[in-house]
Length: 526
Image (cartoon, rainbow, N blue to C red; front, side, top):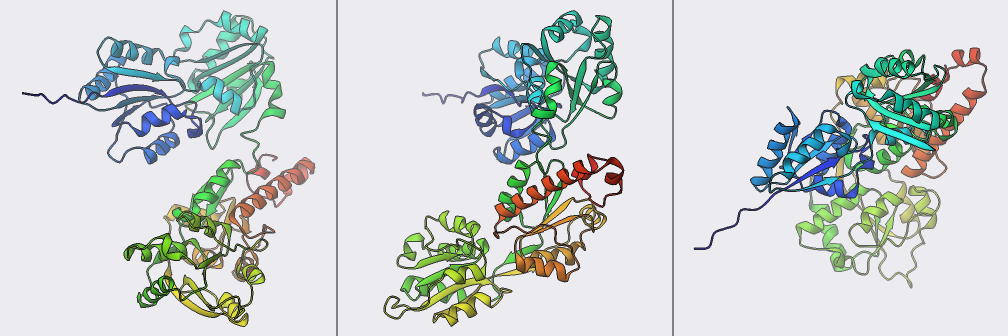
């Protein structure tokens, strides 16, 4: 009789790095995506855990590490023997923790397959994010037990080069006393960084004598940097000096639509908050769309013009219902109102023929759309699948150019449910530093479901129509890009923040305190 072999699981000790999910190595990412069980240390930031959970298998189990190293090792070994892939996710580098080394030793005594995936050490990684180089003879350590530190060796490291230590905020006094007890000069420059590599990372610069008081209010793990590299922070601090660093930015778009905008905002240091203002629903009667899809297949149309990602999605969903695919667009040319819509079309394997090169709007598309020519265009009809509340500008302009237009309701937009009370309160009280509006409907619907943004909130709009609507609602428009696109809108907001910083830096201290300029940029100068 043939016995079925029991599947063999694997164990991985994975370094999470200092906290920024972007610092996970590719091997770490692969191990986590393939894991059945993830045991994580409490030192791993919640933001990184959320990022890992979003990409992990739906049935993956996440549990905090509990007990002594032997207890954690037993959990991992048990999972592997059951045929599961188990991961112990630790902050920094696995071998930077004595407890994890003991776990690896315990696992190594069994027949379980295991690997150790290095991570960027907390001390070294946060020092780089704080703009503190560690030149010359360098010492970087993730410290678990301050009482075991060799302060004589640390003093020598400071004398010969640079030092970076990751410690608990509650241990800062012990570190100060230890350094002073071995003769470290009390005026030696010290940097203390909290929430290292996180959205709210903050570094205070002082001296050995005063860094405990300077770091008052810091909690959790902090990174202490000493030596000549601390003096380079003014020139090399890049993470905290990004244009929108610390700005809380309201993004009134659905999660599906907000992805690109939120990613760009995070790259500039902002903290985006996505609040859907509209919900997309099918048309009340599907007959129009049914006829439109049949017309596409039968060659009734010369052009299809897409004015939104939602319109692209609505047409492709209808295609899927009928078992159709991109091949059935053969012979039909496609125009898109902007680059985001064009990307949605390309995702289905089709390259649009026309995207406005200048203004990405109805007017911009009309400016580049050729009039109908009976000789060159034997088929003179255009399909325009849009929202039920779309304006008539585009359809009227195409008709003036001699085209027959089938203006079809592809989807309905309805007002979304109000956001949670704390977000509504933040909108009305100035809890957001900026709000980005990408259409007139986002203005109308945000005000409808949550109220008007506070006067101190910077209002950025994607184009002139949106600006008009914002003004109608009594909002002051601060930012409008030259080209109507999401990337240009974020770029314009970042440029505006830089201008604010420069203006405030040039003001006398008394004038700064009386300035009406708001937001993190202003607060840093007050």
